Every structure is written in C-alpha cells, then in structure tokens.
Length: 130
Image (cartoon, rainbow, N blue to C red; front, side):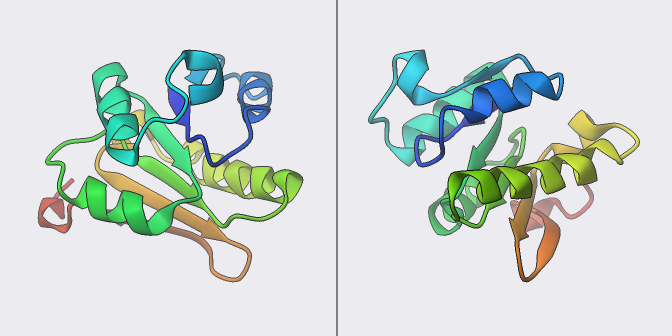
C-alpha cells in the first residue's frame, strides 16, 4: 500500500510507516505540495493511488463521498503525535487483517479514536457492494 500523510499530521509518520514496511509514503512538507487544499490532496492521492492518512474527518468524509472510486482513507483522532501514531497503527493492524488489504480499502474510510476504536465504512455509501 502507498500512503499520503496529510499536512495536519506529522511528517515523522513517513519513517514510522517505512519501519512497518510501507516505504512508499509522501507528505506535503517533503513532497513539494505544502499548503495544498484538501481537494488538491485528494487529487494527488487519486493520481498516485495512495491511501490518505488524516485527522480531518469532516472535510475528507464529505470530499471522498463525492468521488466514485478512491483508494481509501484512514482518519485518526487528533491527539499528541505519539498517541495519534498509535491510532494509525491500530488502523493498519485492522487493515492488514483483511484478506486483500489494498482491495479492502477501495472506497473505504477507516476512522480510529480512543473511545470508539476502529470504525470502517464505505464512501460513497452508494457503493455498498464494494
């Protein structure tokens, strides 16, 4: 899986993803697209077939609901950097348990919070067969 870590999250997550075996991850700070809008981030993720990792649930839920086909997103509760990374790891643990993680994430939105745990759902909702 390839990832695009949103600018609202630490670029140090790139090294953490690489340590988990996901060396193909980018962040706007190091990718030359710092200051991009959420819409531009989604366009980049779609063009590169990358899952988005973000803490911006409201905006990404709305924007991805309008995209017929996307590689998926992990949305974490915004906490301190280490605790937020732990939530990303919970999401990755969940995704890695799926038979084919990349296929599973197509049009999926996996939200993770301390109180609710891991909550996957399909976006857009019209693709319930996905």
